[in-house]
Image 1 (cartoon, helix red, strand yellow):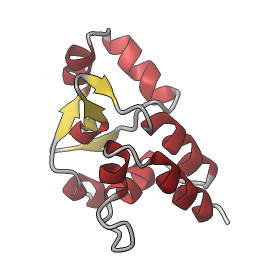
Image 2 (spheres, helix red, strand yellow):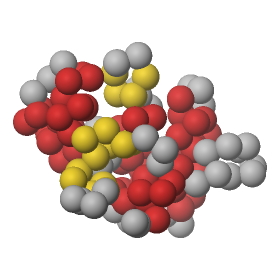
Image 3 (cartoon, helix red, strand yellow):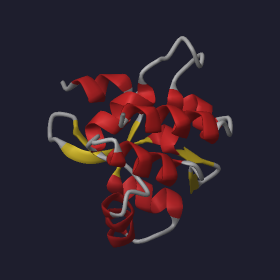
Length: 117
């Protein structure tokens, strides 16, 4: 089991994401390709899944895409970005993904931008 797999408590396979958002599976792949969502290969069968915490009220977390863009600019790949978002940070306190869910995107993006320096 990979490090990223252990860090996330609930993973949604892409067909589940499609159903949750009410969009086609092709659209879900588009979200992953354009950085709106992050996915990792998990489980015994190594299927692409998205962390369930990237969604709130049946929609993609508003602040996720911009935050992902900052992490990608800092040189992170999808798995590394997921690990960063789910790693507890005592100075927050909590995990960056939790802060995003609480609407604290400015602070998280500032921290993500600092990674690129």
